[in-house]
Amino acid sequence: MLLKNGSFYYEKRLVSGDLRVTGETIAAFSPQTAGGLMPLANEEVLELGGAAVIPAFLDIHTHGAVGVDVNAASAEDFEKLARFFARQGTGSFLCSILTDTEAQTERAIQAFLDWRKLPHAGADLLGIHLEGPFLSPKHKGAMPESLLRTPDYELIARYQEKAEGHIRYITLAPELPGAIELIPKLRALGIVTALGHSDADYRTTEQAIFAGARAATHTGNAMRPFDRHEPAIFGAVLASEEVYCEMISDGLHLHPGSICLYLQAKGLDRAIAITDSIMAAGLPDGEYMLGVNEVVVKDGDAHLKHGDARAGSTLTMARAFRNLRKFTGRPTAELVPLLSENAARLLGEEKRIGSLTPGKRADLLILKDDEIHRVMLRGAFCNFD
Image (cartoon, rainbow, N blue to C red; front, side, top):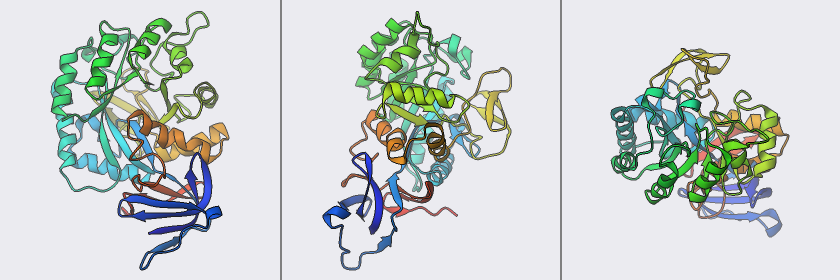
């Protein structure tokens, strides 16, 4: 297929030109200034009329949507998630397992493996994010305190063996005994460490970053706050040139001004938009579950039923995109890295996904008036109606 006369996200800007898709792959791109691309014999041509085309989104932190909770999901439930996320512009995602019992965590891992054996459409489930169990009780958020524990390499090694190497990402609190020493061991297992649910001070956080931590989980939420005398983990991750900072851009977890501050501190290549969504995403207000927790959603805002802590969000990546435009006033081309490229780089997936470079998978969004008009994944347009 030849996508003709579009405005394509290419080398950090929107460039007028043509893009060819062959099979599941972006085969070629040519700007109009270089003459564009001529249709091949029997090639389908889609005239875009100048519409913007950007990479599909990548969500590295979600606990579910449309009635599916990752901790309790079946293989078929993961497929339901994949199809819903695709409609929201998400091309790839990690499923986030909330701190739970060993048996339930392993059950969720097995469901992920079972999903991989199914024929599937929709977004690509790249792997697993473990949010815990090595987290601070002081900043536990929606984590069940009775299931939190100190760092244990053998536990994660067993989980990774069970997952056949598909645990890609883990959140831990660096101040816990043995946490910093665990970080390089996690890296050797193929797991990227994010810092979060933490009461760490500035120096401890710096040590964790030096040890190899590369991200901060929902930055500013469930972590020790900034103080001018002790910037703590919050200040350390914003100051670091190495750390990618997750942002929940729903207007509830972070004030729009905080998002603008993060972008000033991190630049456009170290901030990552996430949803941290729960099973209520895409559904009305009501009562839901998040792992072992009962959750009440009112006016789209999720809180623990027994407690005042927020319990994830009802955000989608499509809405995060709209919110980021509204909150920051930045053009689409500046926001694309936050929604795709940066997360791909963090996970080491940048050679496959995250941009529209020839040779990468043809996961892209066609926009109309800055809204998602069509979704192409693996070289085919999605239609789940």
